[in-house]
Image (cartoon, rainbow, N blue to C red):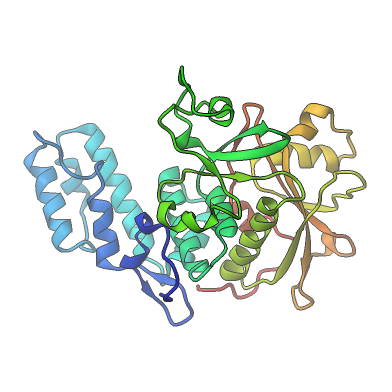
Length: 338
């Protein structure tokens, strides 16, 4: 790792090794961190079979686990947790890098719990952005692995981490806190030039909001994150520029970053007019320009490709970075870090 400021310590990046080409390599220490999660630690009263399995894996986290060892666990929920855990472990260690494991999940439609995928995306992004000194880029990267709640505040579109919005309070600290439904005890700052230096110390709290208003720095930073994501995972160079207006956009090819964006993109692709409600859901629109050596599929040649992010009616933003792996109009050759 570089000597720059650290961030996202909770993702476990310190526990991983690096391959010669910069990918993340699973270690026994990283696998043991899963065993330390509250869901995996046998609770008081757990049966002997579960306790024995947990202790055995703490000693040798890569050892084979025969089905009978899980079947012997008395509690049905515990058996399900262990089945998922072993399936996930076997998938991670079955590839040279975590990046390759992630690509295999996306390419082959493997089904794993969302929390596992979010954690994997986070640690890959932590690898990609190591040494980044731009707090806006780091905060924008959170959108790829954490759901956001959006609100319009003083003419701006503000995104706050959904887990920092647990409910309302009778005595909110500010109008922004009230509009987002935060409790009075919640500390929430909108990231700006004055407080950007505090991001590193509080990065694992996810308590800084991001301004995603068109034409401002937040959306530009998200474009930077996506550029880095695609370059690292697919070895493709692409320039991604925010577009402030939907007018005169010819969607010959588009990549949607979420289900809401897919519905909007399909409507535009079919030539339909968007009503004001649908237009109001669009959070970000980007134009994609690929490097000359990138082979574009025939259907997308001769016209710009676009990328769309949109929130739901209840103003939740949940991006799907896997769509960038499967949705770009490119022919995939040798991918990075496989």
